[in-house]
Image (cartoon, rainbow over all chains, first blue to last red; front, side, top):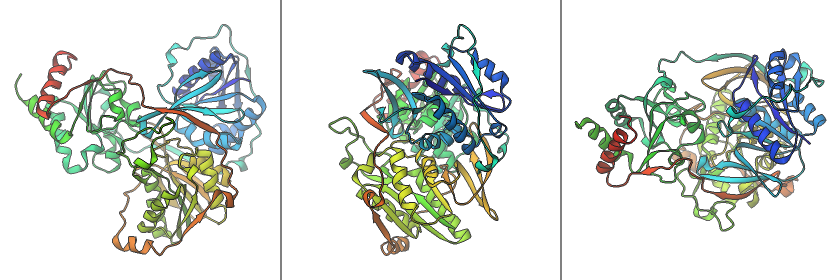
Length: 326
Length: 256
């Protein structure tokens, strides 16, 4: 039984998390002594097939059908379900992208199986793969195992496995195109155009210093506190999702999986607990500073400097100290 | 429109989490619980759909006895009635088990739409809604930011990654998982709280519904995450801590 990695592509370009899923699959395959197969779905995907075949996989399984040209949960579930029934893998590994979140639980359920989603690590205990995932928004980790018969399903979190160590295989892997039985009537959702809401006027990705504010700020009336600090530092102001959801700051200032990805010299997080959706957007920062009243907030796991305290005291003190000449 | 809303009750956001003796879960009796925040957005969307198109909002939760208070809260905000699939084991059930329990309760009736939050704040699998759609045999879409009723179907706006969106159309009945921030959640009024006491809250058990509670995954161990970085914690009163931090940023990290 193989490890089957399902790669994600959009319009002929790979989703970069696909390579992380492949890295995870190869690592698990090596540990378990199982062959690794890679699958993709789409329509005109010759170039992607060839690129994937150059990796150290045993075979490439390419699901091609005009009805797979555009992603739909019904189309993907049907096509991948057929493949998995036929290939009978031990484990199916996918990147934890928005698209995978949209179809993978359905795919696993259609085969009467569970999915361990958003995995950040994997190790073997007496030959059994144990997957690590986060609970309570990152406050705790859990070791999770499958119960019951394979195939098992996992999706891996962004950044949890390193794609930069992938090496090409000795020889190109054979590319197979298994039959896909799919009819238009099976696809119940009709996808329309993809679009962006509005042009961004704030580009946080090029900011050197960022002061980011989270729900700890309690209300929009308290924002001037962090605005003054940002001004004193010469930093851009950013926010976590709840702050933008509440309309306290515009969406274009949001950092995280649904907002911008930033990599400043310093990221100063004020009243941000550090849910994973936020961390993926800023963990590339060189230095992370966190101010939070909760010492167990996950933001402190990735912070270089931390102050556990009341932001309503610490932030004005910082602003004042910065305004005092050295 | 008849809309079902799935609610989960989870430990309150600012809870101090203590591990149980087996190290397999948190100590439940120590905790206060609240409605899973993403589900509150789903409830609000259902109430708005009812205000616009008429119909009924039914709240359904699969959880232990304490989850009844989450359903009452939803009734106080304006939901018409509640269904509670009650079982102590559902407190930490995996998504597949939870979805089977919800499906068994919903399947007894007809519906136009089922709404769920995008994920729970405790387990965070983000799967229950999608599995539920599969079990109910209806089309679905996730991370929805807008719901529009058309003649014979609905059109929704789905959030994609990195600031992109997509519109989709699908026939009813359907299931949507609602993205947090889609709307502004209302508070229960005193009148609402009073009214909620007279609304129907039906208790069902997995046994009478014939729900298979066999898990597909198991938690072996729960533990605090290992730090990936050595954090220098700066202590002391605010003023001193601030000065010490700036000193470090200037001369150690050389950022300022």
